[in-house]
Length: 86
Image (tube, rainbow, N blue to C red; front, side, top):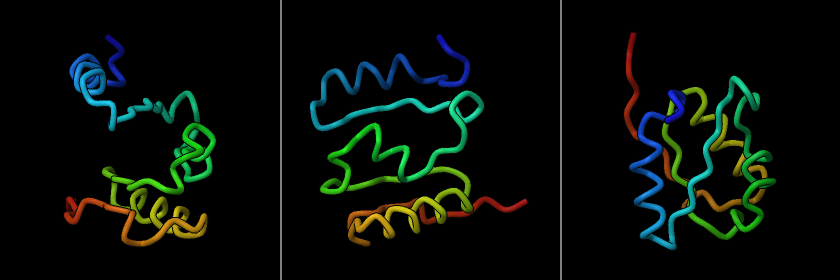
């Protein structure tokens, strides 16, 4: 099991049993930072889908803005509503 994805086995099992869930693993140390364009390259149909974003606050905001620039509707973008403080 790759240490970069500690719950990969569990997530793969869930995705296998749910055809509405597509998981693409991304390691920013190997593939650079995640961007809306990199997501679009891997999932061209993303423009018509709901997007759920979880991660550091700055990353979530940057991705949300990038998806909006690609023309994805604001109501289709869902981000975590909490922010961890230092």
